[in-house]
Image (tube, rainbow, N blue to C red; front, side, top):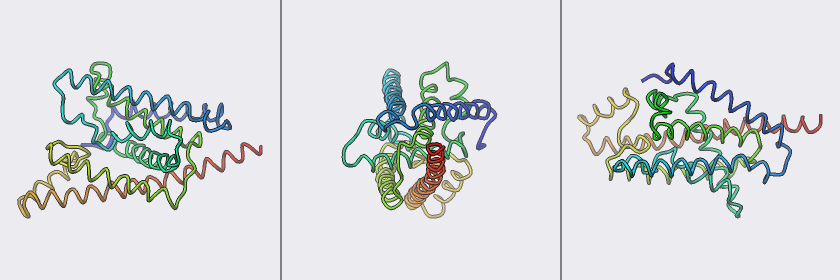
Length: 256
């Protein structure tokens, strides 16, 4: 399974270009406004994300419900974190925003590297045919745009001492819940039951014949969890560098 397909290239690349242009226009229009104004576009996206998920669940129930649609995937986290970041103003707001920014950066980066792992060609080709395929493509693209808004509109001020710890603890909790439910329900949440990467799945299956099914699965869960933690941490620091870059640009624009 290739990292990119022709279908991904001719749809995702233009989509990202449009997202960047839209984010740049919003930055020009409201980039110097108070945070409550700059948050409005993000709040709209958060509402759309929730509406899409409600639609997905209703459609799944109408078809007999697929356990795979229980929101226990990595990307399912945005159903919860985006609305909270958008509308919560309590004392833990910075922590929520940091976590959302880190995992948003992770999805954005993974979409740049391996979009075919997130959704397949068939999802794109059936975009206007089946709601579930529409949801899959639209959902992930909206989250990508939301990440660009975080960066372009300065919706989060990174705290390099607290943010990584909060993000890692959050992802660790996710890994425990998702991996446990994947084994109980025998459903591939977040790649915790089987591996969507064919070459790695062959290794997992082969290893079962050597050390046994249970030890292999435990080892597999640990490896996937560590990779999740490392990837989120790496994504956070990339996001931090982008944030610093845009912060310097904003300072120059204000003094120009």
